[in-house]
Amino acid sequence: DAGVIQSPRHEVTEMGQEVTLRCKPISGHNSLFWYRQTMMRGLELLIYFNNNVPIDDSGMPEDRFSAKMPNASFSTLKIQPSEPRDSAVYFCASTDAGFQPQHFGDGTRLSIL
Amino acid sequence: KQEVTQIPAALSVPEGENLVLNCSFTDSAIYNLQWFRQDPGKGLTSLLLIQSSQREQTSGRLNASLDKSSGRSTLYIAASQPGDSATYLCAVTDRGSTLGRLYFGRGTQLTVWP
Image (tube, rainbow over all chains, first blue to last red; front, side, top):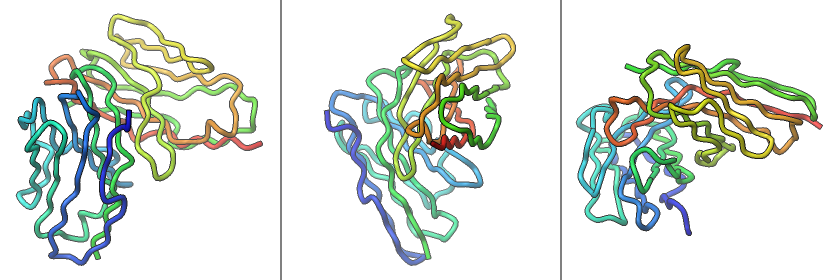
């Protein structure tokens, strides 16, 4: 299996620009999670989906962040407008049942200048 | 809200030593506990998952124990090797959680030198 695929691996952009991060979960997995990792706060859950439906978005920091899952094989996390404090590594993870081990992608390292 | 703490934050040891990494959590009403490994620039890899009804899990040189009542777990690494160098994270799933939401500790950064 190809594993969870995230793109891009690295993104550097100027503040105010729109940023879109992409994730392809493992085929057959019906739960998808977006996390953010920083030195200050560690790993934080932003949002998660089950069967393409957002279940809990309480971790989304503010309205500048939005996430979609239009189908079972694709999800996006969008930041508009981006700010320097959004700089972090963003991970996507998927699982085939809520309480089973989550499989993580390699992350997108985002730098907002 | 569940809070997960890991001690120590960093550990540097010579090859061959047996190691213990510690994890504690504030709410004992958990569904399961997982230990992950994270290599630099990579995502997380699940190492061991312990259900709340279990006391320990083993995989090769790794052994994880769970004491739910005291809110503690340990990861034991036997005969450490330089290839074990990575950050190890502990995460729990609350019983009240919807669909397996994980709460992570900050991790223990392990360096094993030859």
